[in-house]
Image (cartoon, rainbow, N blue to C red; front, side, top):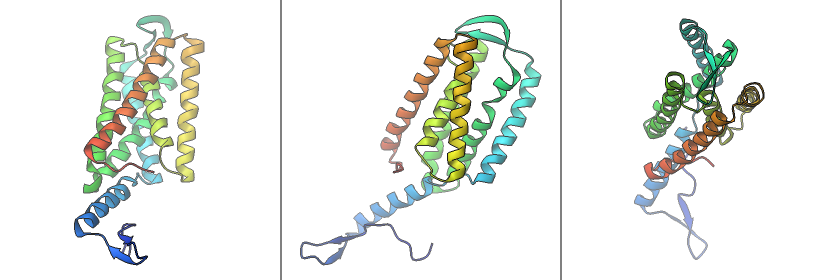
Length: 216
């Protein structure tokens, strides 16, 4: 917006007066400010809702083509079928994360952040696929929702986003309850939460290495 400028480009000198930063220092502050502002952009609420809806519809179609799936405790299949709603529950949150990737890609200043988020989501998808195909002892649903909640809690204060975080927490609590109480599956829950924490922490490290501005 016209008239806005990065904060702190003017310093106080020792005599109490004001002086401008050197041009190179101003450029560094301006770049960091623009990166931070750009990365704070997330998909508008209506986009997030649409992304969640489309992802859920696509997930429903895909799940119908796959047919019923057995409950797998750790690596051992049980004589139970996974409820369709349980399988579908991850797709809205996957859609929201995907929407954030595309919004970050719109600005050159936030493309590194977009690639980082896309890489994190890609790891989650690959591990979830390995769970389905090779019975890897890690819950893809718990992994995705734990990562989603960790990411969303470190961000926005807008009411709609607070509701979004609350829904993520509720879904995570319900799925953990089903896993632990109904299926007695502690192993895949524990591994999923551990990997989600490592993924989030590695993202923080990558942000510093890549020079991506970190939100306050």
